[in-house]
Image (cartoon, rainbow, N blue to C red; front, side):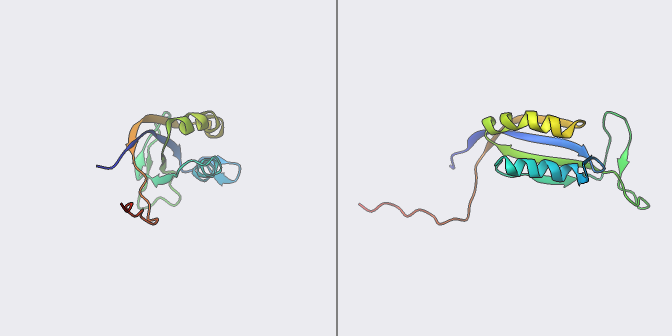
Length: 118
């Protein structure tokens, strides 16, 4: 059985139309996470949702530029997630952030160690 580490799953919910300067908010968040050496991040675009303003965001057939919900997920050590939260709060301004416990293991394609010879 592989050895799983204890960590946190960080989920960041923003709108597709949210911006940080001229950059889409999700791009600014991913760049912040990358520069702070977070293990990795994945961005998902939702097809429908609503937030605190009760406005429905939907990917419709006739939607030219729909304002779709965006989810950014990150898994890393608790210390690294805790360190990045104040910066995310300042960057995002408006959105939703959740954190929950996660057991994880990093799988790599690097060379496998050879068993020691007796």
